[in-house]
Length: 72
Image (spheres, rainbow, N blue to C red):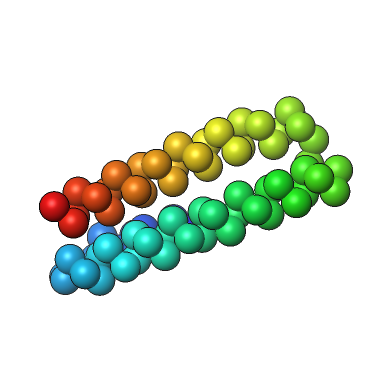
């Protein structure tokens, strides 16, 4: 996800930049599911899952904000 955001910063066209940000947001959603699955399968303890989930939600909000700024 981080590399996709870095790639987005190097894009010349706003549409390409926004597309890369949207891909990053999609990857964050995919990671959210993987964390949830790991927790449900008891591979990831609740005390580890909770802060990771909170951070991931924050990252998705930031990506959404960046996307909205570019579409103004």
